[in-house]
Structures are given as structure tokens and as C-alpha cells.
Length: 120
Length: 149
Image 1 (cartoon, each protein chain N blue to C red):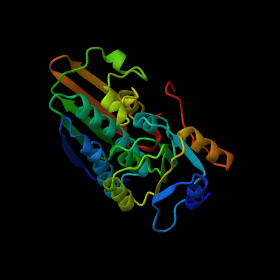
Image 2: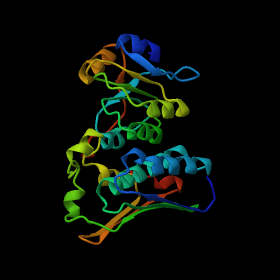
Image 3: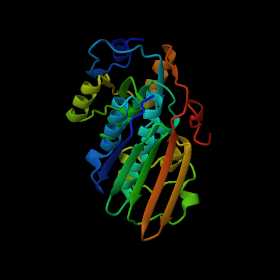
Image 4: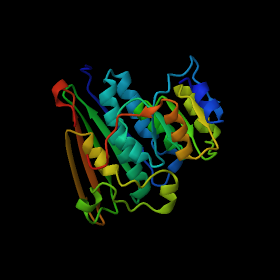
């Protein structure tokens, strides 16, 4: 699914789209706690989160996250959006909850990224 | 593989939340410029990020994040001068956290920080003394068959 299609599906607002068109959104991982994201995400994926601290974008940079979806109407600061622009990581915000966002994406073919559990 | 030797040091200031993670992101970027492969740079980035955030969130006076790069390995050292960890075994337990509510609101406190550092290392050691400080050493081997689990 294209990033712009994801935005339509989630009735979202695109904060920044990648310059050359974003990668296909086919895998995702959802969490608010960043250490869970760092622990459990094993490959290039889309991040669904309600956390808008500056560390979100730095975690995305370290993990090569391909896109970020902010849920529950959360909107990161302009500094974070500018940082994402420099990294070319597309972002959108949606008023939908994390559960609803995940459900809609799953129903439209997006699957869990390869990951592991906390005790692995 | 890059044969370059390098030493990179970053000072992390306690409580400077806005800048949290910037040293780790800069370190990862430097490693990529040096020709370190994406997978190794990613693992170092994770180790460094968790160490940096621990310094920022918990260390009384912040501390130092250091990476030594040789053709054989990348050694990451995270050091502070207090307050120290009372029970290291408990701190290493996945999910255990002493993060205050304000840190949870920023996305921290999953209780995976030290676990993440260990998981991404081929060698991990932690020394801590209450009132004196904590020293964490992580080594990531650069030889192809030595990938961390």
C-alpha cells in the first residue's frame, strides 16, 4: 500500500511525504514504549505510535524505520517533522486509536514485521 | 569491511531530554560514513541509544558514551559516576523498570534497556556500585561469523 493510500484509509494528515515517493507500506509494528520498538523490531518497517518525544525520530533513524504513523491525534513538533524530512522518513497523523489503526491496516494487507518477544 | 581505527566520545548531560538519542544517532551516522555495514551500525546504534538514555534519565551527572572501532570489533563503553544500581540481576530482568511517570510519557520505561544492550552485543559486562557509579562495556565483533544473536 502506498503511503498516500494509508493516509486516506486512516483519514490522516500527511506531515511529510518522502521526496521520491515512500516505500510500499507492507509491514508494521505498533508500540508507545521506544525500548520495545528497539527490542522487538527486526527489520525495516512502519512504526505506529502515540509517542511524540524527540527520541521517536532518533529511534527511527537507528532502526531504518521507513514511515511513522502517529495515532490518537498526536502531532510531533515541527523540529521532529524537519528532522524526518532530512532523513526522508514520511510521517502522518491520524485521530484513530492505535487499535483501530492496526485493524484497518491489517484488513488492508499490512502484516506484522518480523520481531521477537521480550523473553527471546 | 572498513579497516579504519577510530575512537568516538560523546558527553551526555543529565536531564537534557530534548537531545536524548542525538549522540547515538550521530555515532551511527559516523560508523556508516566509515564503511561499517548497516546491520552492525544498527546494533551499535541500539546499544548506544539505550546507554545514552540511561545516562540521561538516571545518572546524577550524566556520563560518557564512547565507541572504539578496530577492524576486529566495536567496543562501546557507557560510564557514569552515580547513583549506581542496587540490584543488577533485577535491572537485567526484561520488563523491570524504575522509570518515573514523566519518562513513561516520553516513551521510556519498558524495562528493556540493559536487555537490549546485551542482546545486541557479543560480549556484555556491567559493573555498578551504589553511590559510585556504573560502567557498561559492550563488544560487537566485526568478523562475519560472529554476529550477535
